[in-house]
Length: 294
Ligand SMILES: NC(=O)c1ccc[n+]([C@@H]2O[C@H](COP(=O)([O-])OP(=O)(O)OC[C@H]3O[C@@H](n4cnc5c(N)ncnc54)[C@H](OP(=O)(O)O)[C@@H]3O)[C@@H](O)[C@H]2O)c1
View (tube, protein in one colour):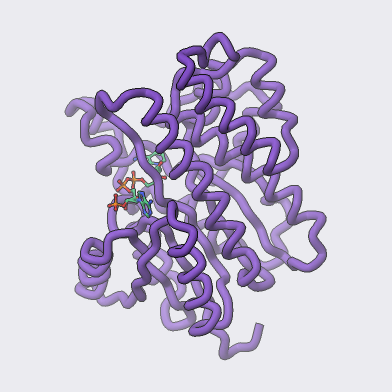
């Protein structure tokens, strides 16, 4: 990379919560050497968030992005390729959770789409413009191991051994179908759409990391996922006061995602891994129970 080239970073779903905190931290860390894109599906909320950071003396750029809309993803990719010549850091942060009585079949469909399939779609669309030394971070969660331990031994083995994106896509669709037919547990899954979506993200990270190891066209590009911790955001606003006291702020939660986004050139041991508090948690092969955020 020439000395003149600024590092270009992009965070999905970053008008609030953890995403906004990651943009803030990346703006501070990269300073004048970086361009940081705050992206959101809602332009008004996105521009408001940019204003918040501008008042703090930071200067993120804004681009609209609905991670569930392929045209929106490809427009973003083309605009960044044209304006900035490529991308160096991608943080897949956008996500949803249902804390209400929405029918389970709808929860499953929407949650797996946004939290799993969209992460795959955004990554696959943007990988071609990710430059050597690039870092991709998927925001996972400790609910992934919690979900893993609720599944049958046979299903655990399927998640442990699946080694193609297509195989994993099929497994995630099989989960949605099992919720629709009312038999997730009989089929070996956990009856938990959000947890299964994040298990999908962690498993996708492993598969993408293995593919990158073998891809000689990509030099020093690393993909990892992490749990940011138990955060005070809209995701957790329904918890009682005592539980809220155990949570950390989105800015504190940004620590491990930003650590992964800025891994030094030539880092070898972090590829396809899942981290919590900057430590690898290989729950597929090591029992990490009891799983606790605090
Ligand atoms: N809070 C926690 O304790 C916790 C723990 C572990 C992991 N996480 C993960 O952290 C990430 C951020 O969540 P958060 O807690 O910060 O909650 P949040 O403030 O609600 O952030 C979620 C963001 O995702 C965006 N989003 C949802 N669907 C989108 C779409 N189709 N396209 C683009 N953006 C979309 C939301 O935008 P809108 O405003 O438009 O809805 C929102 O900005 C999620 O992946 C979550 O699973 C959170």
